[in-house]
Length: 330
Image (cartoon, rainbow, N blue to C red):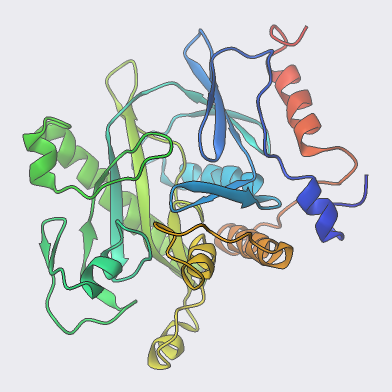
């Protein structure tokens, strides 16, 4: 196999796009993660290199799944004193073994800036003239990407595969019995505390944690637990701190290290909610991959260890699963 580090085409060809292994039971496919629910209450989650935007799987991005998995591991360790997480083990750079939870039906989105490009983001709504969003009043005269006066919660419903998340207010969550008042208050408190920790660590590494989303579940003991991922470039927006003011003064978008790079590339070429999304060029996918790797290294202070290229990522993942779960791989 060609070296997947120095050769972009080899890296693209070696992307992990399918993590279905018939040896493991109860396979489920998400937009990015493939998972298996084991009979003993564990869930095996494999972060693929599939790239989604605007709730559509569009392409594959080299090293993306590994970046997501290892970034989440870093943040789960850095926040475990605030909220327990679902992680049990990481048997492979792309694989997490977790406790299976009863997932709560609301995504907790925390925001510090007036920005975004999706239907649930506050800037597109504000630009269309809305001033009451998610139960928050916004004054006239604000500009894109400016810092909000306060950190806010903007929860959304959780859409099924292929659907779109929808804005919802705290009052609506309670009225519709999606969460009890007590559960909402606990989620709100934990979400704001997690975000504050993330903002602090990001700032110490020259980054602005702009916004993020959290997913929570309840374990067998009734304990609220954070699940899925935390502060990854898929679930969060990050900007470079040192260029933010200059970019704002020039009327330009901040330098980002997250999925917004791809969202903006698409939005400049079509309406992603109405038009067919054009094919993404190889050089754009590689630039996107570079941003994810840079984010990992900057936020964690660690070097990113890319796959050697001697073995396909899929084969390596299968070997790791066979070692971790020998009873299934006989």
